[in-house]
Each structure stands twice: as C-alpha cells, then as structure tokens.
Length: 301
Image (cartoon, rainbow, N blue to C red; front, side, top):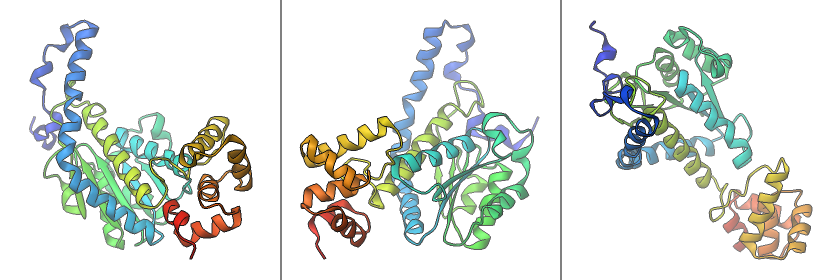
C-alpha cells in the first residue's frame, strides 16, 4: 500500500511502545509520560520561528486585523479552544481571534466524515467569515497536507492576508504556502497515527505561546497579571480584585472603591490607585498609552 501518508513521521510505528498492549495501566502511562516529556525540549529550538509568527499576529492586530485558526479534527478543536479562551482571559471581542473547523460547529463534538478532504471548502469558509488583507490565518494540521487547511491557506494568500502554518512533519505542502512555517516534529506517536497525543499537545503549547505573547505585546498584561480579563462571574471578580491588590498593595476598601468607580475594569482601577487619579483621568491615560498600564501610570500627557 503505497500512500503519501506512509512516509510521514506522525504515521510511523514507535519502537519504544511496540509492546504497549501487553502492559498494565501504570506501565502504559509511564510510556506515555516518557514520550510526552520530549515535547517541551523539541519545541525549544523552534521558539525563534514561533516568535516570528507571534510578531506577525501582533502587526495584524495593530492594523485592526483578526486572527483565524483553521484546522480539521483535533487541530481544528484546539484552534477553537484557544480562540474561545481569549475573550474571558484578555477581554478581546469574540471576532478578534476565531477558530474554524472542517465540517462546521458540529465537528467540534462529532466527526464529520470527509469534511477535511475538500480543499475548496477551506477557502469558502474563510470567505464566509469575511477574511480580508488585514487578517492573518494560522493553518493547523499534524500531517501538513490536510486539503481543507491547504485550501484555506491558499485563499488567504490570494487576498493578501498573512499565513502561518503549524504542522508536525517536515517539508510539507503547508510550508510552501506559509509566510512562517512552524514544523513541530515530535516523532512517532505512542499509538501509531494518534496525533491527538504528542502532535496535539505540541500544537496546544504553540497556540498558547502565540496568543499569550501577542496579548502581552498588545498591552493586555501588566507585570504578569491578565489585567484585561472580563470579570463575568464570582470567581473572576475575586481574581480581578486580587490582581488589583497584588499590583498596587492597596487596602481592601480602596480596592472596592476603585473597582466600583472603574466599572470593574481592572486596568483603570490599577492606574487610579497607582497614579492617584480618578476613573476619568485613568481611562484617559490608558487610551493615550494604547492600553499599556505601565505607560499610563507614569505618563500624564
């Protein structure tokens, strides 16, 4: 059976786990853990390339563009997960980071047979989302050759959007379509071809690095506090007030007053307390500083 998939690293049998079906649970997990420990080390030399991708995302955000993750199966679900966590964590509008999966929303829960095999559908889905030249698309595919993802990347190139590729094999078709190609080769999986394992974990780590770095670069983090979070429930309200306390050292009464005056906006409350200004002046400073808390605290222009 001569098929192009046969040559992929992610489709090779792993000699370290050839006997895994004969082992008790503890030893199965020890083998899985041994393979997983390699992931961080293998990603480390890719950091300069991942940083280049993050810088391109920041540039698109600064020009009013959006980030689209596009994938199929596990890769698509991971993109949707990362995108869905940006609004509560960093206070971004839902349109700023979006995840698109082959087969549509139903494919998040249930497999949609054949959806990933349509190259045309990848472009159509991006067109329906109004992709434009200010935006950037991150194609995610362990194999690096999923037709749906390739179609999306081709469409993005055609209209002048930025294109980044994340794959788990070297020298794939994705790399020829991407402005920045991240090839996170993790070796054969514990269970042959089960790319939800090491490949999926590597993808998740890279997506975390991309959006976390981009959000920090966009001023959504002060020190190491996610000061643009949306305090939409009791837990997040508590977290917001605790961040204000840790950032300012203010007393509880001062924090409660600032939090209320700032309408629950953590950045505004911190600037109020650190610069000893009211909510209107704190908001003005933040606007002038493009949302960067440090600049707003020290600057009065």
